Picture: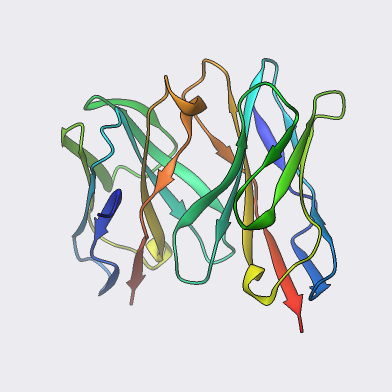
Length: 114
Length: 113
């Protein structure tokens, strides 16, 4: 049973398209995240939700819109895709009050914009 | 504000040799510290973490790390590396009472046969 699962794993799309990445966690955690990893492996937080409420919103273009229908799900929708959006997007979850906010990652979604 | 610095972007080491991957952090409050490993085309997997207590932390795959508060460091060590340890390693810090976890820029460990 995968703890944090995200789909799709690979996504190739054209500039200007809109795409979504879905994420689900079965760990019972209250907090979920989206991270972006660029080609140099730099890992940057994009968003964090706690119990469906947005708590961290880093400097991310508003073309990126997260949605959390419940605390086990955090989806990422991207409008008008640009070449620079090509990256690996990781969903993650944690329980801040337990284990010092240890983050558990999904396997990643490889997005390529052409 | 919190930050973490991994001084080495790449560390080549021969198989069965010891290795140390360096990590320094900055925070105005107490911290939690983590090391993650990322194998090619995979997600990040927790290697070990320091929350409190003993400053020497043992993790999976024979890795250990030592929390040094005076030097604000959390270096990762392994006495004898294996080819399968070739991967990217990330140090991360979370300030106590603060939601955000900040990751370092990663160190690529390359084990040479």
